[in-house]
Length: 229
Ligand SMILES: CCCCCCCCCCCCCCCC(=O)SCCNC(=O)CCNC(=O)[C@H](O)C(C)(C)COP(=O)(O)OP(=O)(O)OC[C@H]1O[C@@H](n2cnc3c(N)ncnc32)[C@H](O)[C@@H]1OP(=O)(O)O
Image (cartoon, rainbow, N blue to C red):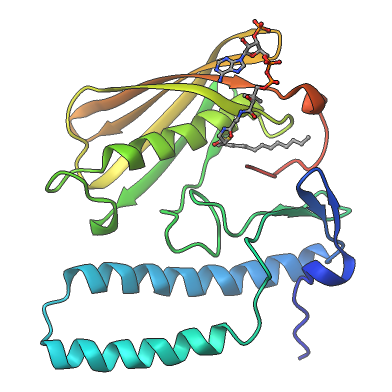
């Protein structure tokens, strides 16, 4: 079977940083699944590299193998970051996003569920997200809350940039299973006030308040429905 890849250069039209790309949805879905599978393995690689205790000589051999694999991936590359793309059916994809990019092994990844009164996401953080021993890095907690609170503010129908994010670290957030939650508190003009939290087995560990601002040029509702910044 011929494998057609979403082709950023061939059909892309760049509008305000979000790129219109007329790759058919089934092709986007297929490619996304392929890249997601690669990212999953790279995520495993990151965890394995952090926790390995194999001897130095074996580390050097593994590194040589990995260098060869990186070179193979580099034979065809985008000229820069992956950005956000959408097609005529309003299927959007942002495979490099730091928090939920399907192709990004650094992303946990976060899968946000939208509900009538806010958003939530369940995830498991491993060794790659450690700050204090056994605990989630505070910057990682902020990153995750920034994202879910931003998605909550946008409701997937309007652009909303983080203006101010205030964190309260109530106690250490253990690595392992976590729940994120976020809800809109109120809106004033272009400002959307959002509250968010991280909960671990023993209760809430982090709370956050955020002001998300709809930029003057992007206040209208519209496409793409699933894009995120
Ligand atoms: C159409 C398609 C949709 C698809 C949609 C899909 C979305 C899918 C989910 C996305 C999920 C993303 C989650 C990650 C979100 C990031 O991480 S975004 C990246 C981090 N943030 C940034 O880079 C933002 C950088 N800053 C900026 O771009 C601009 O300063 C801002 C925040 C847009 C504001 O610019 P501006 O529109 O020129 O603001 P301005 O007119 O001066 O002020 C407007 C109002 O906002 C207030 N304000 C301005 N700046 C701030 C601030 N920093 N803090 C608090 N208040 C502020 C002002 O006081 C003013 O209030 P009022 O006087 O009206 O009461």
